[in-house]
Image 1: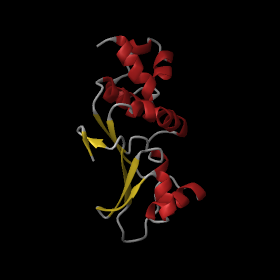
Image 2: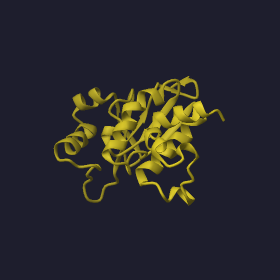
Image 3: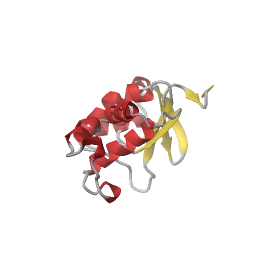
Length: 167
């Protein structure tokens, strides 16, 4: 695989800078399962590995949940470039991970209860808007849930296409 492709994937995932600072850069041996890397660094490497193959569909399942604020910010800042030319599904409890998506689908107990853009869902003043208020005004990282209810998961689909067909 060409090194330029590896570096581009690392830049998109926010891994390039810390890789460049490793003793041997991209040739550094990081140990079994990346044991010498932080959790955030391992996550950014995992995202880069997914990007290097240039897939048409990407699924991020809580991809930024284990990241520190800085790592999450880097990935979110690059998400538009990561999503370009492909369909991206983001499954997340942190609404900050999905707010810039084309379409957000909110599931409650496995059922689709709302869908739209971030702004549309805020204006609907439904479940998504409530979760947004909780997470942004109370500093909560994971959506609060009433006792006895399953968590509510916003699922996002970018570009409006699945397998080349309009969704």
